Length: 316
Image 1: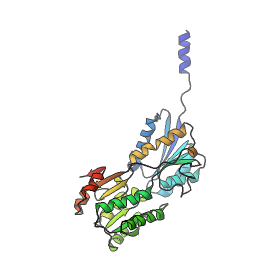
Image 2: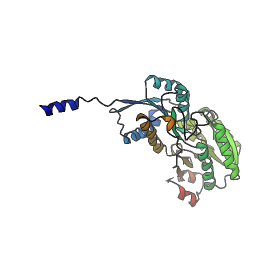
Image 3: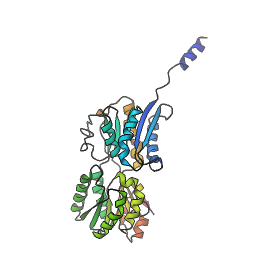
Image 4: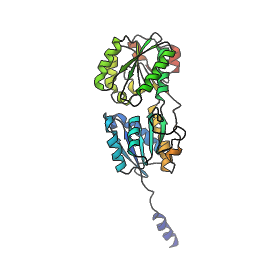
């Protein structure tokens, strides 16, 4: 009888509390679902099992980045314990909406300049995460383009001037081009409707290659952007592999799947009691170079062997 009583007491222990995490994603499940799933896999690696000890409240912006304010407010109303903000617009909206609920971001190039954190080492508020160093990566992308296509001297820099830090990107691009003896040509495309006009401007300015600056708009509308950039018949360089399509020459940037999975590290620590103010903002240390030889062949280009040897992925 004593054993039976002990057995019943054991089963009477309270179940672990279900934790609730909000995810303020750009695009839709069809476009961004694989990145959300990478984050969830990272959480599973830390023992957070969906439906067992954690639930996710997912909010998608679609292609309308102006929805982030309303979506952030809705997640707060659902009493989430942490908000994951995997792009700069989501991070800014979440930070504006709450100064108490912890926020974890990625995709923010200059979190100090945007006023999200006091410093990378000591964020000091309710937000932390990973800074993607997009301005530094842009400089490196231009350098790689120069080595891949050394005859290209006039470089069109395609900017979304409605993004949070366009002047930071333009200054980085100008400096990188100047250091290599190249001419930087500023071209703006702030909406999908401007992609065609931008392509015409690139051609009229006698550009010899195009560097597409990191932008949520350009990621969400990547198929339309690829189509218009292909009309220039120039080498086009992107930051993410997903943007290459069949016509982009190369991409250089973070591996998004790896970064989204790594995002779980901060969320796990916060759910276990850590404060965002005490969790330093990190910077990525690994970047992927993808070269599209199909596009090179279509453009009549031969990529130097030294550049090919540096590639993480070569599309044949």
